[in-house]
View 1 (tube, rainbow, N blue to C red):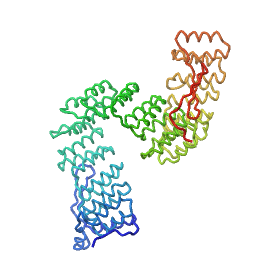
View 2: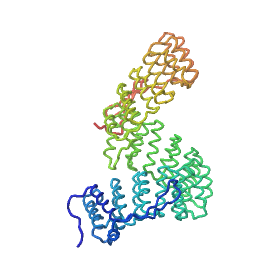
View 3: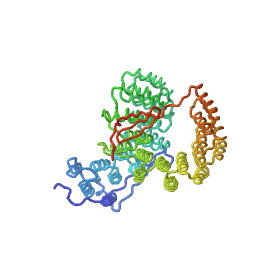
View 4: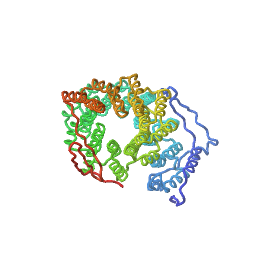
Length: 639
């Protein structure tokens, strides 16, 4: 009679675990095999654990016969996956009937369970109950753990379950193990895998050898990778490409190029890897030369060259290549967006994003929104930022904000003044990076709530990641904006003596700004003069502006102004400040002398322009002629 799943409530995972435990107790434990402590030799335990009654045990450990057409296997395949009640019911019946002992039935169940991250541990339990499991079953679980980004669990499974069950690796297992140890960065385990592969006769297998070359390269052991490459064995494109890529990733571009030139025949991946190598070290002439010589190009070829120019901030060349490339994908657009954001051409970044959404060449992803939100934050464009956030939430694709994207949202809202929304996103984040905390701290500081910034900093010390140099720049800046002199001194002292962070120019600049805003000009001057590093002109300029603010124009401001002109004779700012100082004291002859100096050097002050956002328009106000220009913005307000 056919066995069919009952419509009863699905069994719990704890119930299934108990069934699996009962199943394991019915079988005789197999001989064990494992790697010993020095990860170099195989050890065997040839003593099986006896059953209480050998005859009944022998009967119990024999799985019942099973065929592909078995009703339970058909029911398992049509049940809808591990998250559905029919699947759990069918799996329970497989275990109770003893069919789960059979490799075929267990393999179907394990494959289905490994499709869902939360059900992989149950697959491991099922694996442990299988009579004579093989490498096919263990490879399914290994591949699942690795694909879900859980290398530690994959390693634990291999050591605690696969090896003790005498499951010998096959030529599909070793590439998985090589990828595993590449990700966890354990060179010793990598050598052990290579030794095991050689001992079992798999070193000559092309698939295994290529994966070992890639593993050694990822671990930084290029010499071992090259020894494998030089073996008198068959090689293919993957072998050559893996070795060339290994040289490139370890910064040995010259060695990669020599191997590239020696390669008898190349595929498009070889060309792309070598172009990326030259571009990675900034040798764009060599990269361009290879690009021109390519017999054929794909979108990766174009993206690699564009990214190389983008890394050198050569926006014009990158844009020319982008405009003429025949096919564009998401990477193409993201490279350009990131470039414009990095070189602070934020308006061009937003215009480029508008073009991207208008053409429909590619759908925005997480990296796209990070660049666009950064541009909105730096422009202080809250309306545009809200529109981008709304677009992200309403995207047809599943945009799941990671730490980087969530931090970009926090940064945008905090810099644009909406601290309520910034805090709402900050509080909803399960994981926060140092940059996330820094964005909130600087946001509070910029908008006059230095007390909240300091409170959040102290909370970060207790609950969050360790503060870095940028954190203290944010805290000191918040104290400066809030006039919190004592608190700023406390933070500066804590940075040096508690967190052991050596202050840089930015930290001294914030502290000097804090003191000069409070009117401690002489103390600020001594601080700048006593810095262990050479003070940059910006520090003297800030102190000079403070002199003007506090009407200390007689001596200190004039001295600093002349010092700045000597340091940066082609910068117009110091001339303007010095001229204003003389004008405030009525020293018109000196004002005229400064202006004559500016004329001789060809310096002039550009026309000031104010930008005011009104609805979905931006009004440009030209200060020199009083003219106004209204332009339409390419976005919708979200209210």
